[in-house]
Length: 211
Ligand SMILES: C[S@@+](CC[C@H](N)C(=O)[O-])C[C@H]1O[C@@H](n2cnc3c(N)ncnc32)[C@H](O)[C@@H]1O
Image 1 (tube, rainbow, N blue to C red):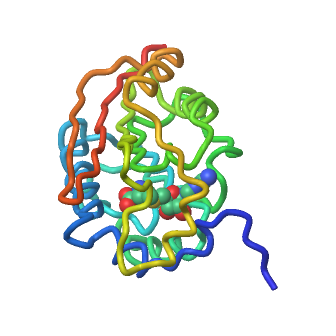
Image 2 (image 1 turned 180 degrees about the vertical axis):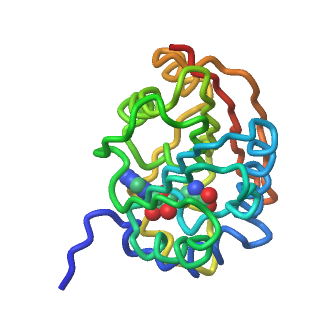
């Protein structure tokens, strides 16, 4: 029988989307809207999506302008879904693996869109990877769930399978993240705090890479 090392590999796509789209949670829709805004603002030609799941927001990408969409995910079935939905329309490069141990082309991407992935990885290591993969002046857009006392890290919903993520989720404050990002050459350019109906708070931060 297959051994899963990371609980994310055990999550079913429909459970994930169902959970994230619940009206009280609303994170699926929020990420979609956030990516649309970022994409339309910067009009990047080469985009890296760490933890891309099945491609939430890819429908906003202009097929005529885009040169490369690289999606990385540890759950292979998520990538299969992304390939089925967008494989014919977008120049997709889907990589199955752990973002923490990847080697990517250097100075290549215009944008890294990192929505709810820093919660599951070694932040310093992954920020370093993004700083090498982005070209000078490239943009990093992050979405970080903010630590709030008395709120569980994984939102409660009828999708109880998602609770297996509780032991592996780590929340970082926006202040601490900005400090770490600056050390890797990322200058903050724009930021916003968004609160969802269930009271959870999210930091949307845009950074410019100075090399
Ligand atoms: C909370 S979801 C991110 C949401 C997603 N960015 C979106 O737009 O809806 C986290 C994603 O990261 C993936 N993931 C978690 N740890 C990972 C790792 N170490 N390397 C690559 N992907 C990872 C999960 O499989 C999942 O698809």
